[in-house]
Amino acid sequence: MKALHFDGRNLALCDVEKPEREGEALVRVLKSGICKTDLEIIRGYAKFRGTLGHEFVGIVERAESSDWIGKRVVGEINVGCGRCHVCKQGDSRHCSDRTVLGILGRDGAHAEYLTLPLRNLLKVPDGVSDEEAVFVEPLSAAYAITEQVEILPETKVLVIGDGKLGLLCAMTLALKSKDVSILGKHKQKLDIAESQNINSILLESLAKLPKKSFDVVVEASGNKTGFEIALEMIKPRGKLVLKSTFHGSTKAEMWKVVVEEISIVGSRCGRFAPALELLERKQIHVTKLISEEFSINEGLKAFEKASQKGVLKVLISM
View 1: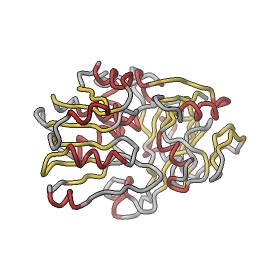
View 2: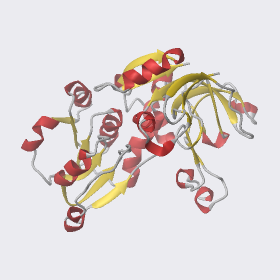
View 3: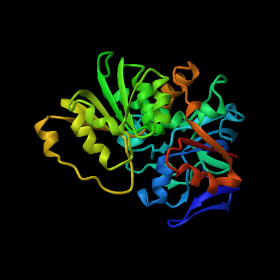
View 4: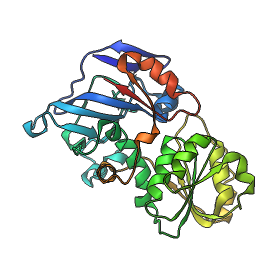
């Protein structure tokens, strides 16, 4: 099968064997989405080697349960050991022995086939298109914020970053709060947020914005400076949610966190079921975030496109 494989130095379109893991379902990938994490892995983040990709929609071709065969699915990306205390509590996202699709110890979704345990798969409702279903993973990560931090209608929220994740964070937070703003560099991206009744702020106008004026700040810029901006904009005793993952380190004046008594919340993956419900109910419109789609044969070109400034979601079709 064809797969986009990263060897630690170079990304290449390769012919590899179909994946096979005992007890896991074989999924034929229909479409996959290129994530900022994929781009960061190529730059050295996570030291991953193998087939990239963790956002996908596909068809189950082989499974221990015949009820799943032929079903259109998405899949939770964290596969826990199933034995530890964390897994037994039903949250493999924090299993110390987990593998992560296309990120840690497990080949990913930028390929014609992948494998996952049936417990990781969720059936896609008929009313959700393939293009929408590809967004379930990042949408679930965005919606997870509302499960970690209480967001009330009057909560004043700022999202830093107008990339794919930042926009999804703003959209999901706007389902809870009447006062959500997003800060970014690209007017065309911010216009998408404006169409969803979200306040948009260009970075060049940041100096005009009152400091320490937001109850909750979500840092989703994927940039080292995002944390510094967040500390400037958050109210004393506010909550700072960190979403960015990137190759590199962040310098921060942590004394500000102490003096202002700021709560920092790390936020990574979310549950897929709520994200599927949002898409099925048409509460979140994600297709506006698609910049372009390429075939797997043009996979390297797709990555080049995804790495360009101002580009949103790039899809790969199998």
